[in-house]
Image (cartoon, rainbow, N blue to C red; front, side):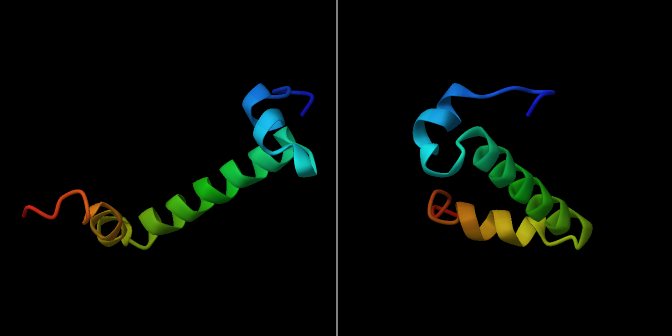
Length: 58
């Protein structure tokens, strides 16, 4: 926290458990999840699954 500081949006919307700290934890977990998808080469399938409602015209 001392290196990057607080983020107002996190403080406003995630104020129940530390705001910025919780936001940084959530961002970190998202980065780890996406990294694991890249490492295991499953990112294409996940993107296809997530974006399939938007790309249903194919």
